[in-house]
Image (cartoon, rainbow, N blue to C red; front, side):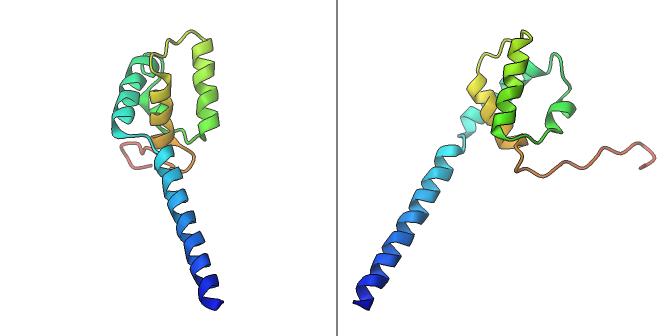
Length: 108
């Protein structure tokens, strides 16, 4: 009886690990998508915003969606929105560390 319970627990925990790994894999964008998103950032965002402004943000996926909606509402033509969103979330999501502040020439 004890052996069956132990095997059942091992089987369930193994299935949970596999399911968790699959979920992380499904959420992570592939490199080609990220590269396309970076190009879209240059095309869609940089004409109006500095990279410093964009790259200093740390937003959750939902907040990035709202930002893209807002920019589209103001007339920005976003050719590949999904790739841009994946790029922004992967690189500037709220789970990423906050960048160090820029220093002036005298270090203050």
